[in-house]
Every structure is written in structure tokens, then in C-alpha cells.
Image 1 (cartoon, rainbow, N blue to C red):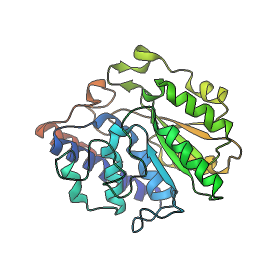
Image 2 (image 1 turned 90 degrees about the horizontal axis):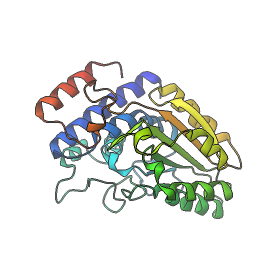
Image 3 (image 1 turned 180 degrees about the horizontal axis):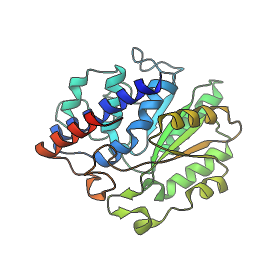
Image 4 (image 1 turned 180 degrees about the vertical axis):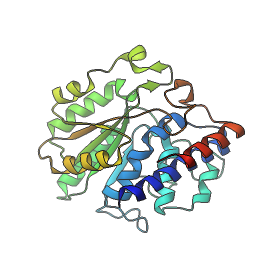
Length: 273
């Protein structure tokens, strides 16, 4: 898909993130907006998937390790045709399938239930090892949060990814610099994050996480790497696309009210992407 098409989808994804979180009056807009471009490129340009057959054995998999940004994933899946867009307005509502965190048993297109931070890379490793044992060539994408990589299990898993030469694992680090309590540097500094991953035996690519071309190019490069996993460190803006949310830690887990939601949607629809 060309860049203009991807920009249009990313814009729609952002609008639906706001609408779904506002409808639920609960959720995490900041990180959902920061990861929207990444998920758009993966699902609409790079991943080998089939919405008509969500359990296709040879599909690429995606593990949303930072599961609290499920509204972004749900919006992308709805755009891709896994389920009707109307379902997005039932986010976090009792009796409906879109829970606050991804649930692989109830939602088409979800490859792994997530929510407890730090566990997604371990699950991705298991999928990757299974693919190797079965001589399958599908890729496993895992989306990590920068606050999340403060978790020790991430580094145990990173060590394992390199040890088993899991070149079918492609991690994308949504590096927006903020978490619920403030900046990463204030809470628990993770820098130099690129050098840490290299020391653990990973191939490292650094990009602007809102540059659609750069995201696509990085994924293509990662697919060619042999003998080691790749992490794409994507510098992003928390709350991207909504000026009053951008780079504000308080929008990590705060739902917009009616007026804020309306203003956010108007700004996204009037923006470039």
C-alpha cells in the first residue's frame, strides 16, 4: 500500500481510538495514539495475514506486549476487516468482546492475550521456537513499551531470543518516553536502550516511529537478518495527533470527556496523517 493510503488508515485508526475510549469512559489514549502508525504499517503493508481466516496456520503473528494500548490494535483490526467497526464503541463494556486488554479467546485477530507487562516477548519466543521446530517461515512481531522494558522478564526473554537465534522475532519498541508516573528517566532510566539490546545479542534499528516509510523500511531490513532477533526502536510521541495530549503523562490512562473527544477528532481529521 502507498504512503497516502497508509496515512488515511492511520488517521481513521486514531479517530476510532478516541471514539472507543470516550465511549467506554476508560482506557489508555496516550500510548494507543503513539503506536497507531506502527500497527497500521504492520497490518496493512507488512504482515502476511488473512482477516477471513484469523487462525491461518502460516500467518505472521503479533503480540501486543503493552496490552493496555489495545484500543489501537482493535482499531487496526476493525479497519482490516476482522470484525465490524461498530464493535469499537463497545470497548470495555460487559457482555462484549473487546476487553480492556487483548483476549485471544474472544476477539478475532488477537494472537496472544496480554496485559501483565513484561510477558509478551516470552510468549513471542515460544511462537518463534515453534515455527523453527515446524520449519515454518512466518514472523512473530512483538510490540513493547519503553516503560515496560523496565521489567526483568523482558531481559530474560531478550537473552533467550538471542541464545536460540530467533531471527523470526521482530520486536518494535514504542519509545514515547513517558509512562504512567512520568518520564522514563525519572521513574527508571532505560537508556542507552540500543546498547543494551546490542549487548544481549540483538540487531538494532532506530527510526522515527511516525514516519510510515521508515517503519516499512525497518521491517523489510529486519526480515533479512539471519541468526539473531531484531528490535526496531521507534521514537514516538505519546498522544500523537492530538495536541493537548501530546507528551503529557497524564493522558497515559485518562479517557477524554465529550468536549475533549470532539476536539481531538476534529484535530486528527484536519491533520496530515
